[in-house]
Length: 252
Image 1 (tube, rainbow, N blue to C red):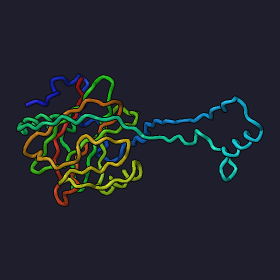
Image 2: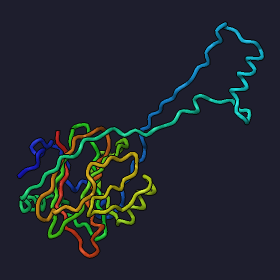
Image 3: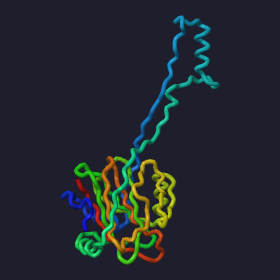
Image 4: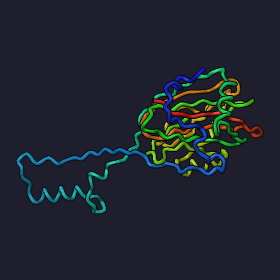
């Protein structure tokens, strides 16, 4: 059974092996800029009813405009920047029993099969592209489950290539704290909601998926310019590496 959007897949759909970083574990550059909007209000003194003031009144008004330190107050100084993140729609997900068929197909594709080692988190960075309007994914595993979740980074896109970043869970946490603010590991059993950066939107919390029993797939319509972060989480496993079959592609 095909995914709901596979029929609409564009000719330029990217294969899952779009980057070699997964082999040498060199992390891609992170995007950090935040879209900020500001609002300011200014108050204007109204003139006296008779349209005139004496020198004494003018001096009193000037004194009131000054603080205790003798500095004039600046109405523009009360303006504050507020980070605003547009709302996003939930991702569409589905499952299929065609596990053998998907695995057979992905074995013939370059980097369609990877190993997510015990204690590791593999993150696939998928930037939005102007030629498409939706991102799609499918994955399955051998023998055991794996954690999976999706986030969307609103930072401007500077690289249109799909890249892969692999890290140990502790390394991933440290890097997120340094670049994006405080982050906790979360609970893959209950669904981790650990992204506190105002620049990230959570589409699916990281849950353990029975991907060894069924194909897990889904899609999401671009909410705007940004980068999808598809996380395959094996940080909870102390002993078992996971063989992952996956692909990510675009559709109109």
